Every structure is written in structure tokens, then in C-alpha cells.
Length: 207
Image (cartoon, rainbow, N blue to C red; front, side, top):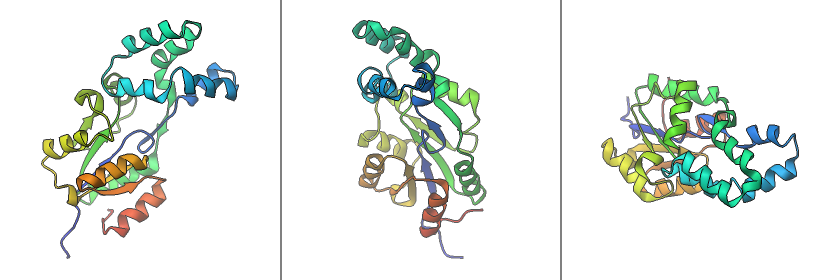
């Protein structure tokens, strides 16, 4: 058999292994008023604000600060923390099937994720997503978020990886580009079928 060119596969978590979207919760809180919901998410509980928790800030602190700025929206801000689990959909079973196939074929598996440590613990309690993984790097624990090159280097150093022999998978092109700059083989995640085809195109065997 020909020698493998890939030793390991690294997965992003959110919107690859499991769908996460504040809209899953806030459509309920805004009674289906899409305009009001989108305004709230664009101006109050923004992506940039959420990234503070991905970078290690505690939810209690971030919520308190945001409520002081937007007191009229206090209840909806508190829900971002208290009802966070309602932003999760079911795991992406088609993608998890690929994870299992890679494990069966003997590849090392890792996760590199922008995630609050507090909420990752919630996710792990809800879903056994990571049982097949050999290791994981979590942004909140490192106080560093993708696409900062530092977090990719932490992954490489911690698990003694050779980036050129690792496939990195993420739904955000900017994160894939950052991985490629470190030397990883980068794939932008679109759906499980496309991922399966992309992996096979790289010669990655799936059990």
C-alpha cells in the first residue's frame, strides 16, 4: 500500500460537528420578529461580544458589563448565558460519521475550537462529541482565538504535529487560511457530503 501523506485530521467544533446559532434561542424570545432579533444580535449581543467569552472572559462578568450598557435589554442579555444550551442544535451526525470513519481508518483526530470553557463543559455534558478525539485545544483555555496564528502553533506544539501532514477543517474561510499559513492542509467545511469528497480527493481513507 502507498504511504499515507496525512497523519491527522483537525476539526473545528461549532457549525461543523454541532450547529450553534443564537437565533435558535432568540427567535423564541422575539416571538418570530426577525427584524428585532437581528437588530439585537447586531448591536447588543454581537459576535464581537461573544468572542470575549471565547477568549476566556467569564459569562457572568460579560453579561453584567453589557447589561450596564443596555439596561433596557437586560432580560435578553441574561438569556444568552442562562439559556445558552438552546442555541445548540443536534449534533451533525453525518459529519460525526466521518469522524468515526477516520478513527476506524487509524487517523489521529484533534479539535481546535473557539469556545467558552464554561459552555464547552455544558456541550460535553449534553453530547459525547469528543470521545473519538485524541486531544483538543480550546480558545478560552488558551486566552487566544482563531485566526490568531498562536493558537494553531499551540495545537502543533502540544500534540507534536507536522502541519503539512494534517488536514484542518473549519466552516470559516478566514480560519482555514490561517491554518494554511502555518502549513496545514486546509478544507472549508460546507456539508458532510462535500467534506467526504474533499477528504477522498486528498487520498484520505475512510473506513
